[in-house]
Length: 138
Figure 1 (cartoon, rainbow, N blue to C red):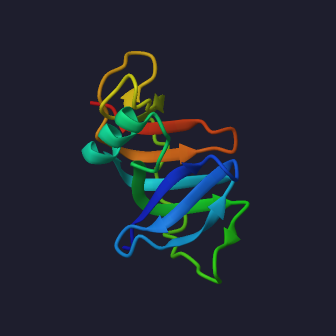
Figure 2: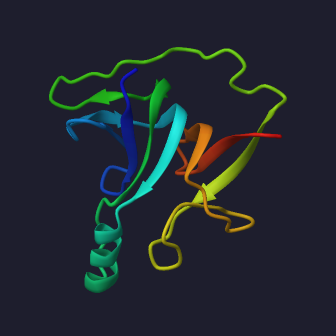
Figure 3: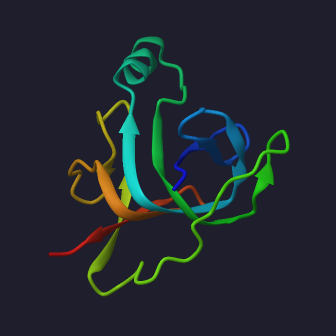
């Protein structure tokens, strides 16, 4: 299934969605829910932010789109959605808020423990700018 990268758009105060393969922005949304998620930070991009003290897109949440709300297309582009996944919030999945700050961390981390996060079963990026990951419990 097609994968997308989502990042916080600070100018529009929303989430930007871009095709993971072409890197073309397909649109903007208030809330995005992803499945089979990877959290990616460009080392060179982070180093540029630290050097220049200027924000730039270098960290993304990548996955298959499950749902989107408040979507606005960019240049008439659209996205493919997987729709609803069964057992996305099963009793074997626990939710935890995640964060990324290039001045403090090299990667995305769990907000409470500051433990490194590279992937999760699902993620929700909400209209308040909050990122929540769903992790498989053992």
